[in-house]
Image 1 (cartoon, protein in one colour):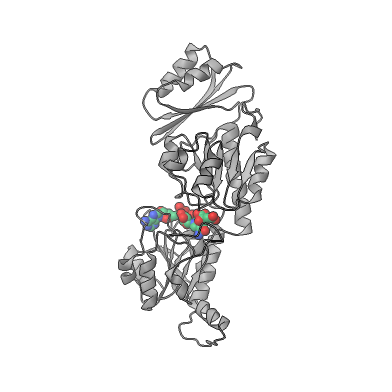
Image 2 (image 1 turned 60 degrees about the vertical axis):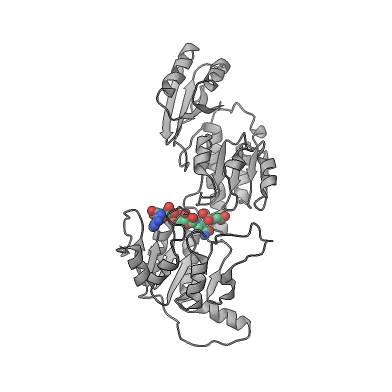
Length: 411
Ligand SMILES: NC(=O)C1=CN([C@@H]2O[C@H](COP(=O)(O)OP(=O)(O)OC[C@H]3O[C@@H](n4cnc5c(N)ncnc54)[C@H](O)[C@@H]3O)[C@@H](O)[C@H]2O)C=CC1
Ligand SMILES: O=C(O)CCC(=O)C(=O)O
């Protein structure tokens, strides 16, 4: 990927890819000379994870693996993490940033897959198909038009009008639905969609409510008992965002008392760690609820694209130091600089560090060919291209600068 050969032998760089990340990722690493790749088809138990990460430089996960302070303590060499998905809530972004570990994701490679699933669920639920299908499997014949509706003319309320929410809005309008949305940010309305006056107003006036918000403290139990009271009687509820957003006990009650006509839930507060573990939920008793095992983004197309996108970001960071599109880290887009040597310095974002770095280079008689600096919250990232072929002394001095978090010689 870069013209310069890296200082560190690529075969010694250990990459761990968990949770059945698409083989397209391994291909990207192999094509760039990274052959020390360990893969697992599922998430690993914590103790196994600690062992495999004890000497790993790069980690690739999907939504199951929780990367917290405790795990980071056992991952001393970890240089970057790739979330091969959209959500990054499974990673402690503050702790990783403080340790100089950038986190990358694929912000829209599975957007279309989620949107298509939700669209299909909406059509099936408005027709009451899940319950009729379940009954037919039991030998019952539920031929009736009761509670069976077209999508045309119905109101879709989208909570979280971001990449997925807007895609669904456009597709739903093509079915003749009227789209309204609620978002905490001021958003451009696409097509004929309009912003609802408030979250409560959206709940009270939508025939279908679909959640597409990230997991944050504000979205936790956003759909709780109080929110269900605001919901229009006989509405349909869809959640393909995060399991913390809908209070499952409150949904259970709303289904039991027929406040909700049907629901589709793809994400749960607690999800099985593997396909071998039993899925436990009070929602299993309802024929009018579509339960899917967190597969909103699980299509061949999306997974192959995510594999390529995120591994390329990790390779670029490893080869060249670029952090463009990191979700927790100062973003620097770097050209490669042939004939020079590149040194990365991650530090606490305090006044005077850049001056200390440059003083050190100057006192070691090292000429700076180019330099890039970016800061984000408590972390600063300086990439310096230098002329000298032998810069070991300067590199050692760089590590000693007060405020240093970590340093890397790239080439
Ligand atoms: N089920 C699955 O397999 C998948 C689930 N997801 C989930 O879907 C979520 C949304 O994905 P994108 O649309 O790509 O994200 P996005 O970041 O493009 O959009 C999220 C929107 O939610 C809004 N938002 C944040 N907090 C809010 C609040 N309290 N109330 C209302 N709006 C709020 C944001 O302003 C933003 O417009 C992801 O964070 C992820 O958790 C994503 C992909 C696959
Ligand atoms: O496919 C996965 O593992 C997770 C999908 C997801 O939830 C996401 O992209 O945020």
